[in-house]
Length: 439
Image (tube, rainbow, N blue to C red; front, side, top):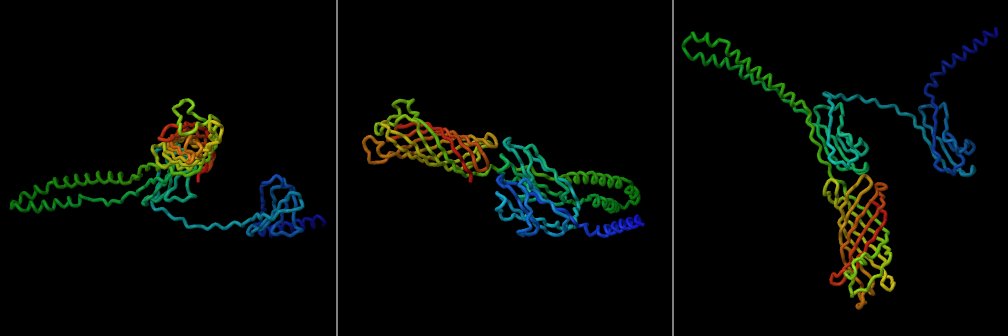
């Protein structure tokens, strides 16, 4: 009796489970995870769908996830999460949200009448290129496919055979900045209606019968009915059938234009700040750099600071060399021969020739003019006017890019100052280090 009762209870439980199982078919468990971005945090607390003061669950900072279930799959849930540095004072809540999945919209497939696959190919004309990117029939910012510079072709399909398709192709020297697009075009084949010349020719036997009817001799009619005209018709038909397939083969081949030569790099504008030390190089030339109208300058370690405005890639001279401009102002701390400070304030403008060694390192040679203004006591006699000097300046620069915006710089400069009547007065050599920023 007892065994039968137990068996009945078990069967009843199984029956209710089988009846309730469909009700839980849409039940899920949800796991929320978060990162510990601050090592000073000692604890977290959380609760589901609310911020009741007595309903928080407090856990150690080593706990970085929370799982709850079963929950209704079709409803939205929010986990309110707070952190604390002492276990007593808590931050405001961060909210982690579960959104129920949306039923996908089933779109009716659009049929392609005559599908084909198209392969575009291009040449790597510049060994400095490190990457390409492309997309078909558009230039959307989020739809590019980026590939290594060793990839020189792209195949896509199925596409509609009787439509024009475009491949927009760009190249990059650093994987960040991209050239303008070159466009490779697929032209659909033109449909040509066959011209059957034999239709006109087949009628010629009828015309020949009319011609042969002109003579009054009836016996020659038998000669006209000989199979010569039939052979002529067959020959013309064979000729037409040979020509037509050749035209079909030429038309069916996809017409793919050659890749257009990529455009030059886009110009860049930036600011560079330099600090450096230099010295008088005219000591090696003796009296050649001595002007009695000005006091002699003291040989010393020469402090200097310079700020330049630079305009790169102004003109592309070749595949590897571009022309740029730089202009700026600076300060040099000269001293007279009696150790009196003589500040020099200069302005300079140069034309720069840049050569990229690789993706991050570039070398530059620059030549230009500089002028410098000093206090009036630089004069030996006329001490009422400021000192003014003008002369050529040469630079060799190296730039190492830390990112697309920032770079570190090294500069070696030599400058010759001409005094009154363009007489050589000072020759200075300076080595500087600095930082650059691109806008």
